[in-house]
Image 1: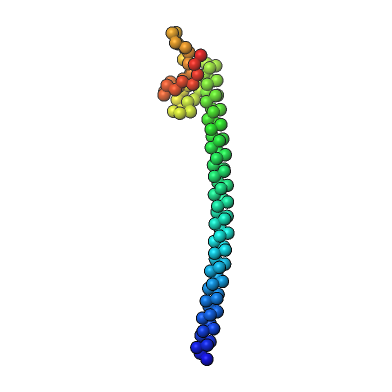
Image 2: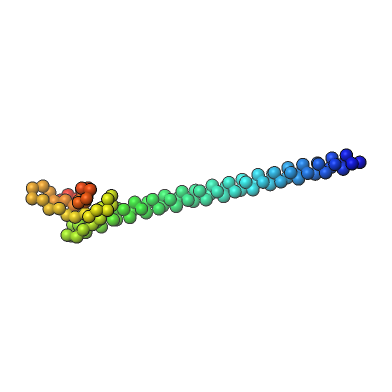
Length: 107
């Protein structure tokens, strides 16, 4: 009788282990799906922020060029140096960075 009792206890333990394993797999699949959704949302957010950064850089460049055209000083988006309008006698006037030499506009 001891052997049958031990066998039935072992069978119940194995059955319980199998059920627990099946539940763990389901939980892991759900967690994987949730993580995949979260990763996709983060990728979309990064793409949106990248577009916003590009738009802001374009606006900064435009603003710097306009400020330099009006006799003021802008800021270079590459090296953060001063952007000014340089008037030349022989060649065309330009709006350029005095630090790195990048030309933003020629007249």
